[in-house]
Length: 199
Image (cartoon, rainbow, N blue to C red; front, side):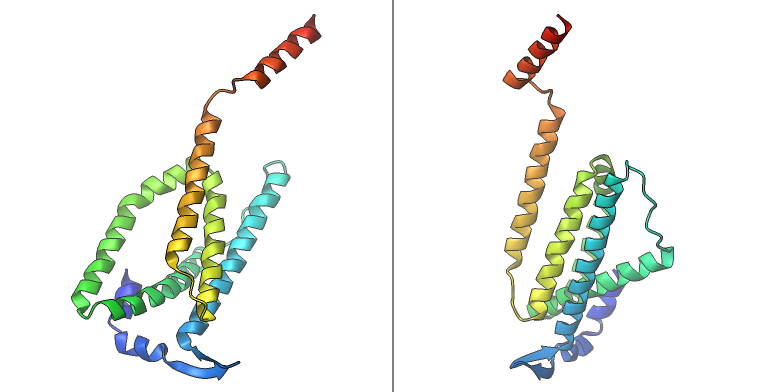
């Protein structure tokens, strides 16, 4: 919240940062484009490493050494990612609303909503580890979107949100199926085979 409010109070600098810096291959490149490209590449690299770690951990009989990351390192990564997302959203807000108080109130309200639901979402993800892999897939998707946006190939966010919602819906169906006992012709067949062996 502090990062986003600080960016809101630096609107004149943000508008200047979004101005073209140089031209490359017939396209103008701004500081915003460079920031989005760097943030997208960071998300791709971080998500790929995390997915690789979880997949390899599953192959090692469930035993794996946790990734050694200091508390300060985690905080720095969170701040960098928050600046990337905040920068783009603040530029959008500046173009939509003229009153600073409304933008600050929206940031504070969004932070309160996140704090209220953070514990519920965290406990849900801990109970269902498959959603951790799904979240890493979302980060890959967002990283690709940021890179495309930095290269001036705008992807409507509605497509991204729909893909995420559809993936969550499918995973919820899988959870429901896994919770039900296995019934049907296959289970009956297996039971008959078992009786034949004992006979």
